[in-house]
Amino acid sequence: MADAKMMSQMTSKGGFIAALDQSGGSTPGALRLYGIADNTYSGDEEMFRLMHEMRVRIMTAPAFSSDKVIGAILFEKTMDGEAKGKPVPSFMWEDRGVVPFLKVDKGLAAEEDGVQVMKPMPDLDALLERAVKKGVFGTKMRSVIGKASKAGVAAVVKQQFEVGKQILGHGLIPIIEPEVSIKAADKQEAEVLLRDEIVKELDALSEGTKVMLKLTIPTVPDFYKPLVDHKAVVRVVALSGGYTRADACEKLSHNHGMIASFSRALTEDLRVSMSDAEFDASLGKTIDEIYKASVNKV
Image 1 (tube, rainbow, N blue to C red):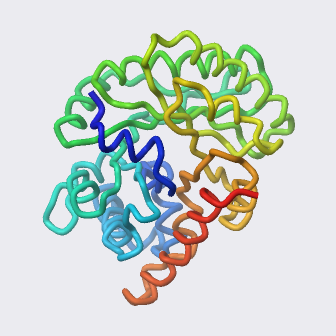
Image 2: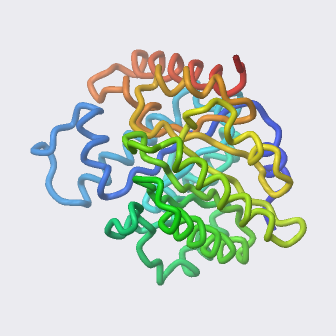
């Protein structure tokens, strides 16, 4: 059963969710942005060590606390790592008051019907059992919608909710993330299909079941308000989706009840070469900006 204090925070506290969950495919790009070139490290082990050091630097910074950051999504290796001598999920909740989530998907399958569903997750139950033991509250899994294909969108949403029910069976709260690409030529039409499919699945959930949704900021402000208000939804969070932080925050500020869950937009100004004071000041400014877009609506 989901922790009651964490559930209360996720349901009603002002703030946003930090996405610290870049996996193998997106890690080199995140490190390059941070100022670590590909030719300065060798192999996955060293790459993930450098990424973990960056994440620890973020989560131990003074501004990274539940005052503004109410949750954080972790990569599996981050969940298994330590911060200040503690397991990361324990450090997050006990020292920072930040609710820990875990990214559980194993990447995207090849595009079909204009979408990419998630690759199979044969070891999901074992991963979820480990997450529960480590004090994780919920999970996140991503699919991608590249065009307004009715069959494709339906397949994405069906898979997301099927896996979501498996996650719920472990007492964890799933963040369901069917991302609509901001590059989709028919993005608005895809969002109409997506909202309809999500509503169908939400309405079919058993009484008292709760999920979260992570969605691309919609073309039409407040288009996802019916999802925000649905009784089965704990929170609707927004991905930055390739927008700059300034653009993502501006768009998010027009969507009532939707809060940020940014990844690249959270770290875009951070550099490995910064002194601790410079790093903490830059991160603090970023957190303030994302927090304001999440809680102060236009």
